[in-house]
Image 1 (tube, helix red, strand yellow):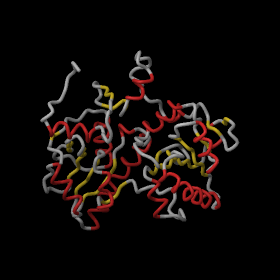
Image 2 (image 1 turned 45 degrees about the vertical axis):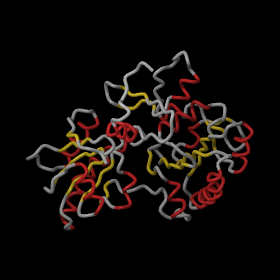
Image 3 (image 1 turned 30 degrees about the horizontal axis):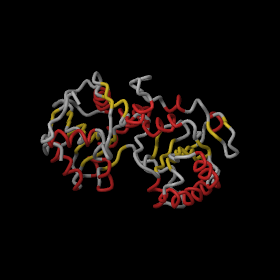
Image 4 (image 1 turned 90 degrees about the horizontal axis):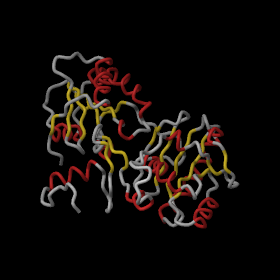
Amino acid sequence: MPWWRIDFDDFPSLNKMRCLFKIQDIPCLSLVDMASGQTIISNACDLVREHPDGRGFPWRPRSYEQLMVDGLLDKDGQLCDYSRIQGAFKALYFAANWCPPCKAFTPELREMAGRICSRGLKFEVILVSSDRTAESFEQHRGAAPWLAVPYAQAGRRRELAERFGVQGIPSLLVLDQHDRLVCRNARAHVAEDPLAQAFPWQPALVQELAESHRHLLDEPLLVLFVDAEPEEVRFAREVLTPAAEATQKYRTDQADLIRFFIGTESEVAEQVRETAGVDDAVPQLVIIDLSLGHRFGLEEGVALTPDRVAEFVERWRRRQLEPTLFDTP
């Protein structure tokens, strides 16, 4: 393989690459736009097999809106237009009939969907199947006659998984009435809230960094470190909320996903601070990407205002900030 390579014994670089591209299985071929540093496709192995001549390269995934143009199968197997469910909450259900955990979860999801609809909410489940045969796909739809992406459209189903970073099944995520992603791990919420009393399980835009957020630490985080006094926490929330609200339009784009947190004295906040090399000064605003070992800090002496925070986030989104590097765990 006469290509550029990372030396086998360069474990720090290998680990950073695995974290950056969230590698779980091999072989894995990730395509990156080197001009922007953004991942185009997290795993293009199937695409290489399907298009050995390189047709369509670099296979940039379409937007969610573009992926829905071709319509969906209704419960009778007829193709219907996506506009039919405009204004409804949608749950994208990535599953397969051959998958035992999916078979166990599907009845729970069916019951929960019924409860949500009984309250008068417009709610639709869209099956994005990983079934291996058309017969298995039809059996799957028979167990839960929801809307579905047609079995024959394998590329479209794969693009949806790529668009939302789905790497395993069963996986359930919720979009709001405007097709914005509001809950990425809805499967856990179905188990914890089977009556769907907190549906659509949309997290607060600005949260205090806590143990329950540990699973999010491999994603870009904006953290305003402050003292734990209530007035300081209230100030942090007021300063961060406008920028958090403004980023909602990017929530279906993995490359621009960033979460807003207030860092006080929790164990997780202290761990993030120590890992990223953030000193003890407060208040202090930083964007941290633990998977890359990148830290971006607001310039010293700049007053913390909602406008300053929004400008800081926009500069990060446009790749206009120079990172300070640190060693990833």
